[in-house]
Image (cartoon, rainbow, N blue to C red; front, side):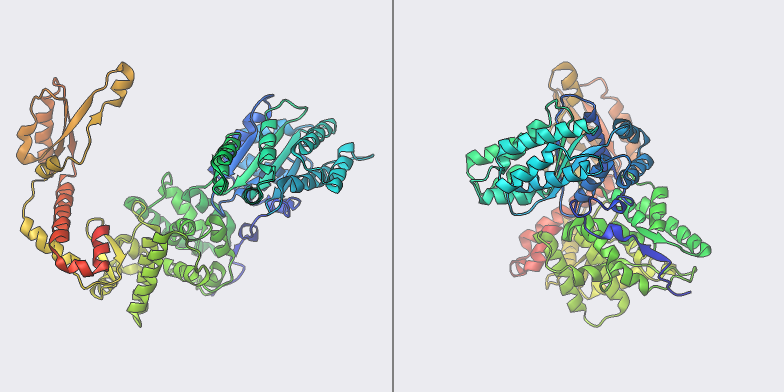
Length: 634
């Protein structure tokens, strides 16, 4: 069976950007919102203030572009909206499914009321006060519009303020108080003010120093604490702290802006890779034949087990949960899934770019890639592999990297592909995969190792042998290099200097190394403070680290100075010897720790010594910047 467009779909509500003013009345946009851990924690902080009479209710939600701040602001406004409205029902149901206790807190607070009057505005290069009055009028007309009889007097006063240009801080705050009073009389619970893209208002304020928007913001934040008839909740969404928008101002004004930021409770807003994967799973809808889906589950279970053993899964994500996420996001390959969130953080706009990819019909976007898959043969699953992800970002996301290190890595991969030229497809795909893994940086076991590359390789039956053979071919052409110390392939620009050969020569000259002697000479660890002892007794005690190997076990002896003996055991027999010797010092003012990775430490010490000798003795490195950089990285 070939590709059927009805088999795999993407919910387009996830792929479009949110505008809290434009989308405020579209209840359907609330329906697919996924309450992540960060969103849930923020909702808890808001809920904790609802029944308090005097409590700060001003929050600054700060996160990078595309982190989902606007979607959260829209969700919160619907959750606090009229309980009879469609938007509230969708939001309430989503919260109930995520956290029943938190849902109960919001539901009980809203019961028997008309909810909050929600004011939403998006930043633009104009005065905040002017836009705020306009948004207050729209919100008031919406909130009071369904009631019989005349509109409250505050509606006419807001219209008059717009007509006369009464935008002074005192005028706007007086209107806010009147709006709260009218909402209270109309059986409302409060006023919610959400300002998205606040930074645009602040940038306008910084350029027009006669404006008073920063003081209006301060007045609004301070007003949230007051015990009015109904509370004012203020939520501002930014990309950075308020005071950072005042960099072009003088020292006194910078301090004023800093004080204003202090009126807000700051909430960092960027979800973990695990949470992003859960949202991706919700966005992808697959209706696969039962037999085929069973094959997907079996293969994703196998891959999840390997990734778990390698330490390549996100922190806190079990193998069982990973298998469920991987199967739910088919046909994205599990390694592609793990790469995407970090890649979007490094080179683009976080979740915004991630979901642009999912909904994109551009070449190598998700929709385009799915259309070229053969998903009917259960014996050989077809995947969207990392090499396909590389193609999308290099073709459709050019020139968006602000980080110089990331930009350099991209350039290295592009240059390496140019040098590779007309090569077998397997070499090209493997090089792109290695390049992407290099760009996101090693994250635990998620790196360009033989095991990870074999998972991405098309020849699933090779048990990694085919992937290693292709990697060796690339290495022989000086396209990639293998870093033995951390078992990772790196894209290499090419150099006349053979670093590996130089290191082999230096290791041979160094011969057998006694790592404890080298470490005691270099003293890489500072004295270790007994912190809990200091807290409990008020007495400061520290221990001087002394490294010990099997050949120097005699160093473990009684000493007047408190010492911690770091025993480097290369075998289990050596560990037993250290354990017996260490027990003898229990009554002294010293301690011992047995390190079972002595062999790896010995190898690392030897490598560092060899690298330093290469740096000192290799004259040809002076005119080889590529070799110098590789040496520095190592």
